[in-house]
Length: 172
Ligand code: CUA
Image (spheres, rainbow, N blue to C red):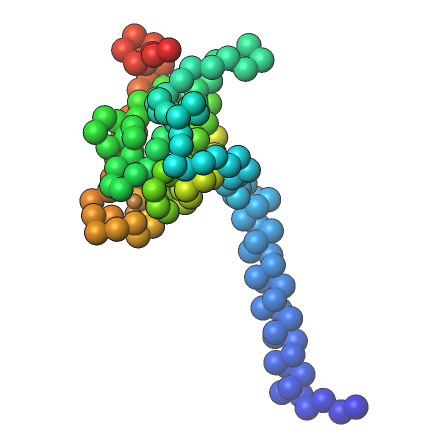
């Protein structure tokens, strides 16, 4: 079968483009170490009583002899609890795992200036683990439209030196 040289050219080009798209995905996951945020746990969004989200905030935990931190956050119309009326304070250079859920509608939880970004879905727990290398302050924004005051839904994360955290912020 004869294929015209221009047609042959475009067929080849389409394969190159497909290979390029696949390569960008592989590059993202392998080289840039991007992760899909886990949302394996589910709960009843109408009834957070008896779950850690009932008393949201930062907890210190010890896993295999290593101290790390868990942060439970509720996203509501139109605030992060904690995060909005009081900042989320965590120590620098420590492993921090966020657990975030929403009792009302879909929200977003994006830590501005980082690659930390998740949807928060009623009934599901978004979870990611990170280390903030140095003391700094980060804004949190809701990037999913969630109602008339969506645009003012924001919060703050304060990353402080471990010693300062131990002195002032450690809660049980
Ligand atoms: Cu919450 Cu937009």
